[in-house]
Length: 228
Image (cartoon, rainbow, N blue to C red; front, side, top):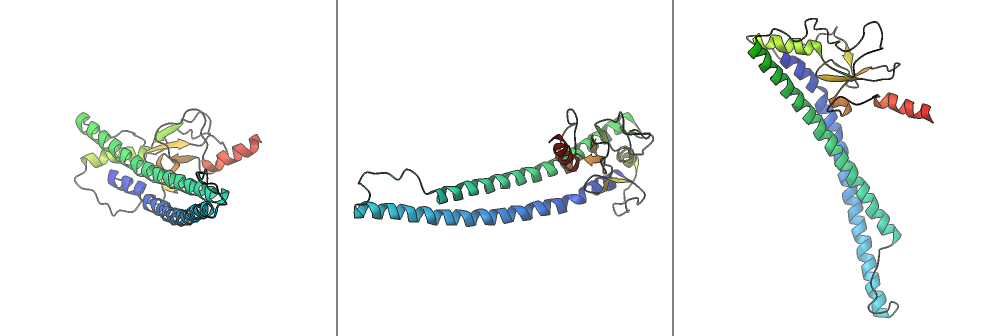
């Protein structure tokens, strides 16, 4: 697989992931606008009620409205929570795109280094399994760069042309929640019984190699339940 085909494969799940996040953002934004309008009406009603109380003598002149009702305050807290969720989703979307941009930058840097050194490849075996023990899971590294992608990238540097419409090899193993082939930097789940084992940095929100043990979201939940 050529470099551009490999990078194109890494981009395939990104639009769907972003689309889901943007759809959720729109839903949250609609909910936020509704709760803000509702809260604004409640606050206006309470202010008008306070003014009427002063006029009727039920509230002494000079008294200030220290706070709104519990209902109005709960609405404000709810609005803040929704706004925080929007920020979190926006940051996640940004990080996903940024991870792919960084991946492209890394590939381009490697291609330039290979061009200058006259190298023909980074990983001679090109099997995309660097950092993982074939005989078992013990002693495996925490992260890797897909070997097949690196070798293909080197070959692409010397190729006269590249066809982006070539299909992905159906026999190549897939990994991660996105069920895509190995590409870029990946991290291994430290649960020996993890069904997926390897994950792309961008798909799990990582930018660098994690320190200590790392578990995917599925196995992380199991570890927490076992700890109780």
